[in-house]
Amino acid sequence: MNVYDSERMSDTVNKTHSLVSSPDNADAILLNTCHIREKAAEKVYSEIGKLADFKNKNKNLKIIVAGCVAQAEGKAMLQRQPIIDAIIGPQKYQELPDILSNKTNKRKIFLEFDEEEKFFKLGNSRKKSLISSFITIQEGCNKFCSFCVVPFTRGAEYSRSVNDVVEEARSLCQNGCKEIILLGQNVNAYHGNDSRNVQTNLAKLILELEKIKNLDRISYTTSHPRDMDEALIDLHASSKKLNPFLHLPVQSGSDTILKNMNRKYTSKEYLNIIDKIRKKVPNIALSSDFIVGFPGESRRDFKETLNLVKEVKFAHAYSFKYSKRIGTKANRIDCDISEKEKNERLQELQTLLKDQKKNFNLSFVGKEVDILLKGKGKKENQFRGATKWMQTVIFECKKSMVKSQLKLKVKDAFDNCLMGEIV
Ligand code: 5AD
Ligand code: SF4
Image 1: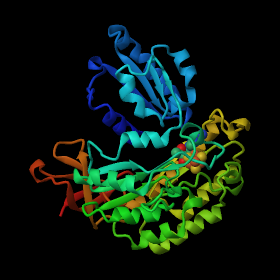
Image 2: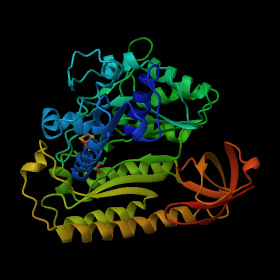
Image 3: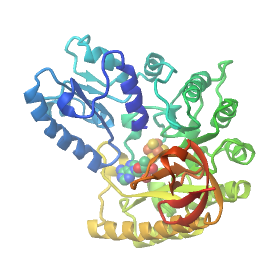
Image 4: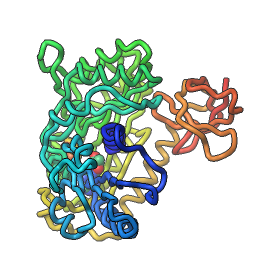
């Protein structure tokens, strides 16, 4: 979502500012930040420290911190780093043009949750379009998982209207976009209003987007198991444009830990959803997030996570060590697991997930896949594309022959990519 936010921030200021490639030439430096785990927040302070030299050389330089670290730290951040000119939360970056043109009366802190105003001011027309582009359709979260800062930094659940999303998608597709990835912290809880002002759901929104002629692929992330309704599962079977990919974080395979995380489902309920969706789309790529070392996680709890992974067989996954976040409920529980134990658990889980990713990718060897071109590879005449299962495919091709959409034959597979050849 920060990639999307950064694109929109740069769109909002394009009348007065343009992107430069080095901070030496900048009139303003904007850091967009993430607060989900501790490491990310500390990185921001070290980045700001590095910017002091630029400010010394250019007194008019504006340093602005946006995103969830700004939201969470607020005034404290200004006190720790007085070189900052403005602090903007993720629901307030519509103020950027005014901040940059000194129209905000020396105000430095912008942290209100004004989603409606934000999307209204941003508008639905996009200046730039990538072959695969993001659209935020939903923001914030009401779930309050005990480890997570999102409900505090992004605010309560908010859904954009169907019309707004479709207009933005049309604007992207007029400029060459072929794949749209719908974003939300809790994307399948989407409940935006339709054209008759009636609350709708993600499945209905996707059906509207499917009508856009030159849009080929639709994906959505991140979903919560509790909001994985029948309509959405059914749509995976009937839709011609929905990618066979589902990112459905389970976090843990232990019912005790799931309860303490306030996830409100059991491992069996999660497995039932997987079963249902696999019955509809047998070759779907399943992806998940995992946290190891949540307070109180015993070796037996962790084994239950490994067992769940063995049962599901994921095509893709992110896994993290539990990170204490101020303000969350889990922060009040003493974390009794040593760093060494957390590292070992993470290693064990990641080895298993890596094997599963490789096996999933190996099942494509010898098959033909359609790709959307994503960019150049590391070597001369090498390119990168993406399948609709969201795998990266590396292939060689003369520059003059490369096209934005190609059919490739898969020659080899690894845990993080496929190797292909033009058919
Ligand atoms: N510690 C570790 N991982 C976390 N995540 C969210 N909060 C924390 C935390 N406090 C992970 C979850 C979530 C993903 C976006 O980040 O797995 O799904
Ligand atoms: Fe955070 Fe996702 Fe839980 Fe919401 S559902 S609190 S965003 S982990």
